[in-house]
Amino acid sequence: MKNEEFIYLPEVVSTNDALALIVRERKNYSLDLEDVIVLYADWQSGGKGMAGNVWESNPKENILASFYFFPSVSPSEQFFVNIFFSLSVRRMLSKYLYPVKIKWPNDIYVNDKKIGGILIEHTVQGEKLDSIAGIGLNLNQTEFSASLPNPTSVKLETGFENGRVTLIKELYWILKTYINLLKTKDFERLKREYYWHLYRYQEFHPYNVRGENVMAQIIGIDDFGQLQLETDDGKVLSCGFKEVKQL
Ligand code: BTN
Image (cartoon, rainbow, N blue to C red; front, side, top):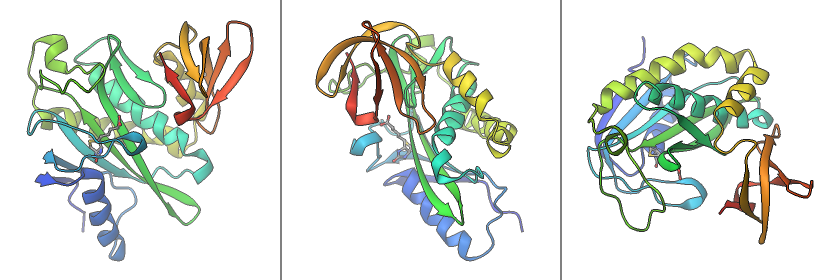
């Protein structure tokens, strides 16, 4: 029997956690690994952000959704799942807004402002990963907590409101259509596309790297997802997520 692919719950602690629970249950029976399963909610009481942060969102105004898929990549290739998912979100959103950028590793940016965040959590299935990718995308919310540095939403950028389910379904079809890029390990193409849309790629800007302020440009991402910066005096710095801040 085909599993139900769209699950709606009005309120959850975190859509990633709720979906992980359902996937674990289904694995005990007969989860078809070709499935993409989506779970979305109106509100999260404990939405999770990157690096242990909290993800805040007004009820019913934004996309709070998680996608389960089996990308057929090994744990050492996991950054390509990030690339694939952030490119898919970017592609979906580009129908509504332009230009949509990806800020390393996977924030979604429009006009120098954050419109969406992604949190991907993996489990190992044999030698391969399976992934739950959560997206928080600001759609119709127009007022944000003052503690957020630079939030925006589709409504703020375009003046228009959009239906959450429409965009979630569009993202679902994009994931189904492009997942072969991951399954066939077309990493070169994924990386090339990621660079095309990478925020501040090959532009000099100020950064703080491990406590030191530098002027540098992004010159690439290594296969483990580390950011490669080149300083204005030609030094190459390789940085993990917590080691670098864009100033
Ligand atoms: C970030 O810090 O930028 C990542 C935020 C990711 C938030 C989304 S909302 C849906 C899914 N469920 C969660 O608990 N987190 C992700």
